[in-house]
Length: 169
Image 1 (cartoon, rainbow, N blue to C red):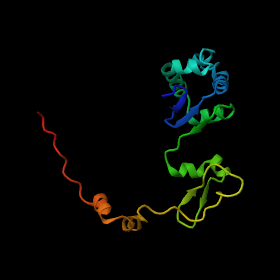
Image 2 (cartoon, rainbow, N blue to C red; image 1 turned 120 degrees about the vertical axis):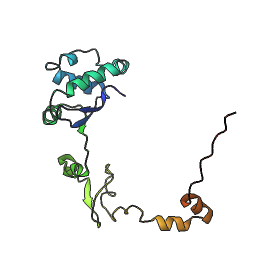
Image 3 (spheres, rainbow, N blue to C red; image 1 turned 90 degrees about the horizontal axis):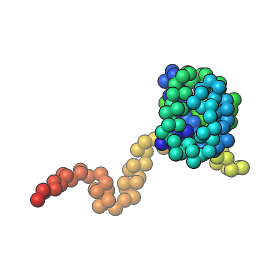
Image 4 (cartoon, rainbow, N blue to C red; image 1 turned 45 degrees about the vertical axis):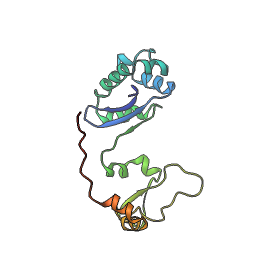
């Protein structure tokens, strides 16, 4: 656990991820929230070594802070400061509907039935298009097994040998 770089639960049960790995991000967070949350209104943890040394205390402090308001409040509040944060999605559709990911064109329909994520980093030209959809689970199993020597196939797909018992002497 890194006390200030973790996932925190909001009052309505949603999760968000916070990363104040740089001192400037911690200072921005405490400056924005310190008046409402007195535990944050101190420069005691402004440096990474201090936050690391007190990581359990910092984590408990942030856990209590994030539990005070619902996700919508935190989204509005955290969007206005520079500390990196993101919602924690629990369903694929939440990813597909996320405005930030949509604006970055992270997902696309390949020629298959499901949306597919592109490589998240852009390198000028290339890697921005989807040529084929991801294979379905098990789509290439037969090809892989046929390419393996028979002994490996048997070892891979055969029944498991009974567990050996250790004798106690």
